[in-house]
Length: 343
Ligand SMILES: Nc1nc(=O)c2c([nH]1)NC[C@@H]1CN(c3ccc(C(=O)N[C@@H](CCC(=O)O)C(=O)O)cc3)C=[N+]21
Image 1 (tube, rainbow, N blue to C red):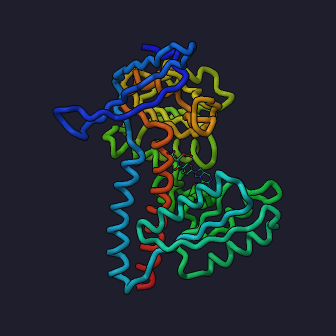
Image 2: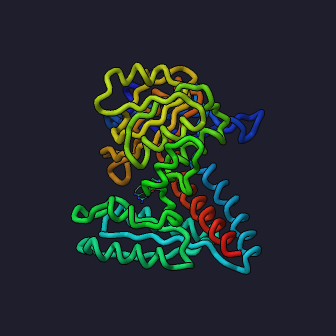
């Protein structure tokens, strides 16, 4: 059933009575805006067929797993602690929030966090000096330079300066190159696409022999996501702004990863019945009825797609929290390799 009239769609999980916590199903509650003073709120509940992939809960589980692993690692190596350094240039509110959340997540699992905040006016040389200092710092096992950087700084040059052994974002061309090659393993895989694959695996979605469509070809999501799916023996089509028949290609896919950065571009009729849908998008759309005046939507029309998908991720609470969990995973992996080499 289409939710054509819905202006504010929220979802919640319901627990089936017979099997508590197992198989959460997506339930959509659509509220029709009040049109007259006398109008009462109309609430309609639709039970769709998709199983909600709860990224927030899975990320929480991963953080607990990592905490135990970090405790063990510390005990094994005389109290040595994994360390993550985060470099933030400028005052973008969203970047500040992300960096704060990353540091908080580090603390939660027992990773030491270091940070350098530089002003918007910082020169490329200053940023490169900070990266060089963290490259040389033995307490730091992962370096993340928060993107985007101010326009006057060459992002590529800064990312290339990060030691590949500390490249927890997995953005260094040598790590991406290894990801693209059969028979090679990169030291680090980019966090967001790695989180997408982890969500599919932990939800029991088969990848080998399946058709996958990746919408978007960015260096940080679409391209590495396509490489990861291909490494899992899926047959992958990458769709981008110049692709004819994007909808038709998607509608044949068993797995869709949407990372095009356009709010709700992937419609319900883009989804093959029974397909798994991973939504990487985080788009703010105006919503006067929301507290902040906007709400977040993904690159997928969630309401429509969840009526056809077998599995689907929400936004927020899907891929976003997994990105941070995978950053911690990468950081612990880096520290584990370093400690082993020193032992
Ligand atoms: N060097 C670098 N590495 C990154 O990994 C990187 C970056 N730069 N720049 C910005 C993007 C974006 N990103 C997100 C991380 C977590 C959420 C996240 O946790 N989102 C929550 C909350 C969303 C909200 O309420 O704003 C959710 O989707 O549920 C989102 C986005 C990492 N990025």
